[in-house]
Length: 390
Image 1 (cartoon, one colour):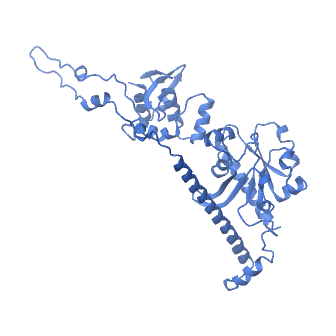
Image 2 (cartoon, rainbow, N blue to C red; image 1 turned 90 degrees about the vertical axis):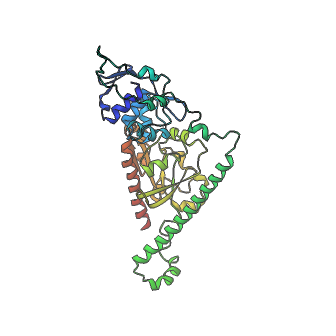
Image 3 (cartoon, one colour; image 1 turned 120 degrees about the vertical axis):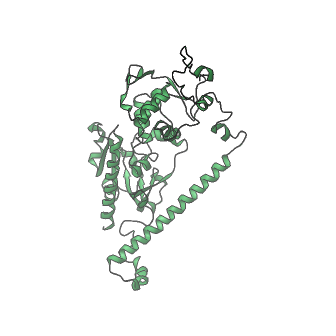
């Protein structure tokens, strides 16, 4: 039996725990033994044949998120299954589909004559056993070779899709602009409505209330919260854990991805602004924030919308900020300092002198990231509520 078929058989039977690695070999119970680097018949969309080592590691860790799976595989120096191959490969190994175009069968299938058993006869010419049924269709499929695969059909030579990319990018930017405006309008309306309810103003008094709102203590700037989407500042330096590259995954999904890994995945220029949403549930957005890393680009009125900053722990981060010192900064803006839990105490020596919240995460236990992200959201929400009552 070939390695791919053996792995599929053990996966379907739920006996993956019987597959063990001994030296440079995988032992499938007492049934089979294959080299770890043996190529299987499953071909990646990128064109290479997956090794048995790659497939065994993937099928035993398929429940992990793709980013976490890649990080663990890298620590063990095991080649990974690409994201696009994950689902069809798993469905095949689990027996949910019988076959797939990705399987490249080796041209060593027996011929019909070779595989037909010889019927044993006695001297009196009577048949002793009935011959087994021969699966001729499987034998034919074993020697078939496709003229074109899915990737070859999708290839469009001498065609440039740059204009398609440009138009799609423009549509996405326009969508984000409209969503940002809608969130801004929604926040303003919500704040005004909450102010109306707190003062017991009836619906008949709404017009008078709206006229006097900007002259009273409902004025958003006087309550230290400016109209518009709140802003969170992050350092532009790579030596900090949270940057504009990975802040969205951390705050929205509760997953920390190192900046260098995220930069390679993005394969493009650094964004000037990222929208991060706090979600009450998977499909319900509670609040939205703009994340920026260039304080020098902020206008004077933009500073009224700044509610939080991830600090680098260096004095020069706050150069040219419109505040006189750290005391004023962290009275008006909540500060967060992200660190690995096993870092030395000296790394946080400076920030411990500031009024900032130190958030620790693990270097390897990615399932703990969500708790750290929730702590950031909770601290931020408490700070905004306290600031709105100033």
